[in-house]
Length: 334
Image 1 (cartoon, helix red, strand yellow):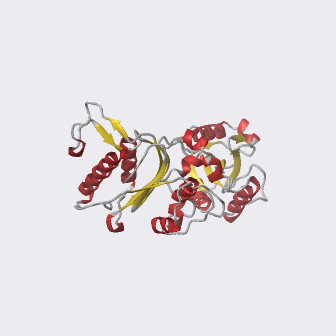
Image 2 (spheres, helix red, strand yellow):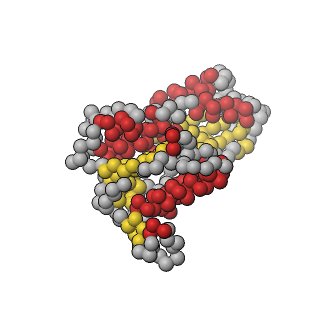
Image 3 (cartoon, rainbow, N blue to C red):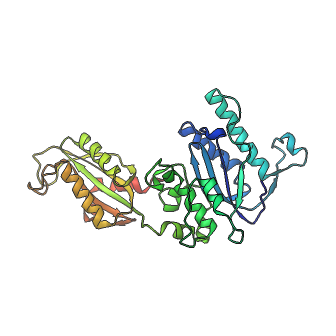
């Protein structure tokens, strides 16, 4: 690979004969640790995506080689120069990961294709359509006049959608898109550089993404109904985290079962009126009886409490259990 400092690159490789390179969740996280160890000393990572049989990195190269501390072990190819190039470091990354997978799976032979590819992403260099078609297996649309960098980052994040692994890019855990949306505070990408390039605004502005905390309440078969509600909700929005559940005494009408209360944090492109409509539809499908008294028994009760960081439900200020549930979700890393 010819990699020079001062440029953005798309770096990618896939399993030998398109075979899997990740076999379980731990493999993905182990590979991310390898990226941090062997790649980040040279580059700022702009985007990444790990797929079952290949990976994509979009990086800005700061250094083509680094001087090794005396404690580092040199490989034969590095001789006694005490320098390691980015190409050498990527090779070590892939070989060390391969050895771990070979041991785990009881296999031998190459895990990755022989040559890792690196394509410079600058508009002054014509990147022919064949590159996108053969590399990505799909036609990339340039109609919005995005730069090659923007187009590549957008594709990398949508790769799981194009491969029909998920319906929405944010549903795939093993990419940097959740970090772009603020759903996760990953430390692998250079968020400041990404902001300076305007990539977050450009690549997430086409669809408004809202982070919402929804209050949950039930005192009729609470465990069963809350579990069913979450399954229904997950079909319509991205569920990020569910709080612990808290038992509380009923308010207003004491002659009824205790309530189970909690909250769920979700990510959605729905606006507030449409999300409220969806929550009401879920309540109705589950048999919510709206003819009884306001504080009477209910199979499920769903209310928007926090909308993009703003409290929008006045009950929050008078319900200790709701404050605890919201605090648990706000403090989480998701």
